[in-house]
Length: 283
Image (tube, rainbow, N blue to C red):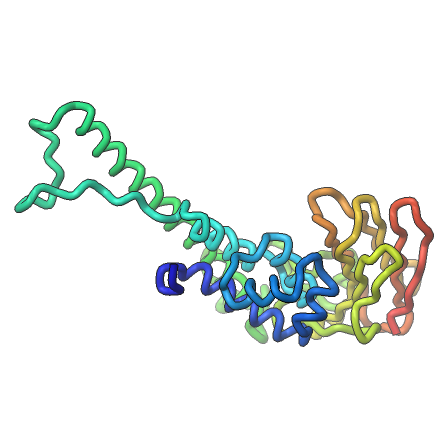
């Protein structure tokens, strides 16, 4: 297929290229930090091959991007790549009549034509629904990323907001809250802090720190981890946030946030399942 007949695959590849550019990582480094080779990443980013779902999730984690929009794009691209999104062509109408007239046609042929038309309608409806999901998620991310957008200003919100119910926060009010659900991890609002690059643990997991310029809050991220691994993020005054890798996390977890007012007093401790605890200072 060409890109013109695979629009969802092309959009996914373009989005992945943008994420890779944001990370500043080369193909070789991407291969080193993930389970996918350099040549595989080249095919994913060029659109020559559909990226696995876990590869999309891993790149989102490295870029500090909420995976929702990209995974919705991936769902569309997966349907397109596998051919499930291709509508079954309806029966050709009789010449001079735009409607299919089954009168005079044997019952088995008429039934086949009707079933084929029903299948086409069902496939089309699924495609339209999936496209609507992507547009809704994209709109939610765009609205969240607008500078100055506030939940306190009703003129800047639609009558039916697509954003999640968890509203934004600042500093201390962010403690214990999810950076993705609050919009603190919105594109353009996040920067890496602490380590120059994600720290590779003894188990080959990767640990990194993020800071939200909008929310003045920080959190820790762990990816390529194993089931049961624990990440604890702590700060002054005994505040601490702890997460454990579950099967549904697919090796990537993000801690709830801590106040970013004193970055030099924040630290993360990683404890692999059945292993030894090791701690890292943020600054």
